[in-house]
Every structure is written in structure tokens, then in C-alpha cells.
Image 1: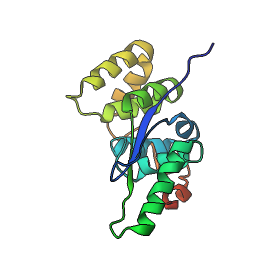
Image 2 (image 1 turned 90 degrees about the vertical axis):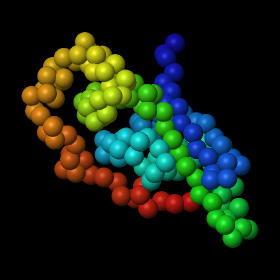
Image 3 (image 1 turned 30 degrees about the vertical axis):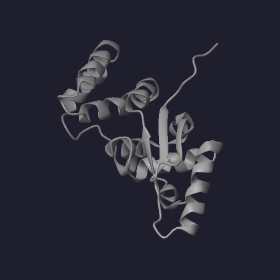
Image 4 (image 1 turned 90 degrees about the horizontal axis):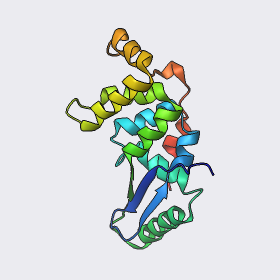
Length: 163
């Protein structure tokens, strides 16, 4: 039986009346490199790229869909409107990326602060399994071998979808 892939995520409305835990794997499977990089750059949650994960997953998860329905209903009947926040587990996401997009995962690991213990642990894994990628990263220097707008076309429609 194949191992079930899971990228833990959670979303909640601002008043915490509804909190949902979900598997974000479907979002990652369809996301572009730029989508994933934007999510990483915002700290894996609490900003628009993470909101996009919750919005996409609401089409596949009834609990998330219910959270958005609650927010819509609440905002129709209250002056003080609420929103929501979403957070993705970075360890799960990087584990998935190491297997499927190792070059992108390495870029993200390089961007981690040097004091982050996960950085050294992940670098050790890369040194063992992909030494050529680590060497290329060091030889190319900072700012080289990174994602640019030309690498992919960013789907701007996702930035304008709001519930």
C-alpha cells in the first residue's frame, strides 16, 4: 500500500468560531513554483499566498467550504466583519518538495536563517542525497539559479479570487 502523503494545514476565521485542519496536498500538486515560493516567503501562513491555499482547498474540503459560508453569513449580519487566516506546516511542505521539486526546496532551505536548526538538518540531507545540487548552489552564488518570472507564468486569477 503506498504511503499517504500529507501536508498539514489549518485555517480559522478571525473570531476562531470555526477552525479547520486539512491536508493541503491537492494545492501543492497543482501549484506553480512561483505559488510555492510566495507561500514560503510569507512564512507559510498568515498572508495572501496562504489564503489562496484555503480558497483552493475549499473546493475539495467541505469543512473549509463551511468555514467560508460561516464568514459570509457572519459578515452579512454584523458590522464588525471578520476574515480568516491559513497556515501550512513548513516541515511537511519541505519534505514533499524535497521529493518532487528538490531544486526549489534547496532554494528555500538556503533562504532559511542560519540559526534555524532545520536548515542544517535539511542541508545535511541534501549533502548526502544530492551533493551535486549543493555544490552547484555554492558555485553559482547568491541570487543565481533562483526562480524568475520568466521560469513560469504566474496565474494571477488566484490572487483575485475572494469569498
